[in-house]
Length: 355
Ligand code: DGL
Image (cartoon, rainbow, N blue to C red; front, top):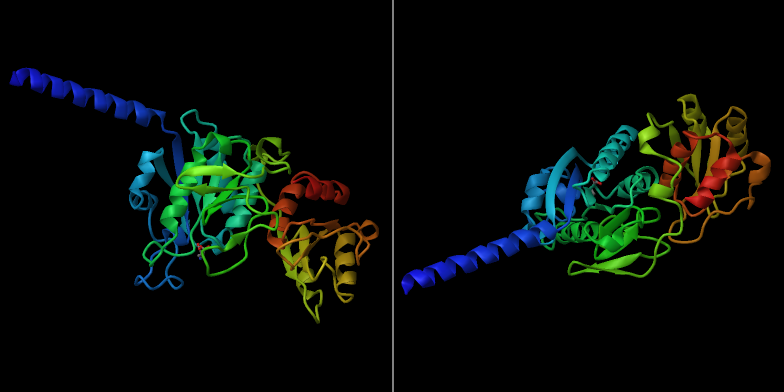
């Protein structure tokens, strides 16, 4: 009698174990590429939500801190860097994009999550959006508070990012950013607030939301990205120097002259209003254009609208490029990539309309 019961019990355990293995085998395979930032940060106490040290917690510890992730995906971590993102360089961008592209090409990878500091997260997301040729979900995620803080946002952001990266409906939507329950396009999301957890916004709104691990989509990108991009990280060896100058009252062109003297191949003007350029700066930028330096007009005004051509400055006459809705830091990313293909301002302008 007892032997039969024991055998029945053992059989049930075996069946449950097989179901668990089969279920786990059905979970998406996600790789988390860690670069540092606040999501890997640590503060001296739980009330240090804004003063802390970024880039301290290694990726395996980050994963271990959110055990619920193992119920939605088979994940493994890779530590690409351990830095605060304000220190990202072009070399970091190239290295990261090559790593992401290499992972995306693997048959045992269904999606990729990049953990990143929030300060330059928007630049990295846009760079990956333009250079990694894959339809697999690539999700960039960060946090505004370290994991040691009260009401830390990193754990849920990371869980949500893995959920989206493993979601088939997230395919072919370009590089995504998941922050604060929202799914953003890596193309046009930006950090617009420097302390709150709802820091990331786009003038065109989120693509969707992620709630309790389920993605809800409301729109899809219409600009070129990933597999439709003419830029391919596999063919990019180095990036040209492109610098940003800030427009304000009493502006002068000294910074732009210094950028060009230091080897900048293009300068981005973070202009006032519609990317307007001070009368004292126009001749400096015209001189740079005549020296072969590309001039791109962006705007310091964020949160909506876009720079149009031939507004207060005759771009057609000057041979300048209008940055459309891209903020200065994103305009720098596209200009760098554009210059790996051409220095023709007409072709560069096409790129700003298309990407
Ligand atoms: N040092 C900033 C960075 O790594 C911290 C901000 C954050 O990650 O939220 O971008």
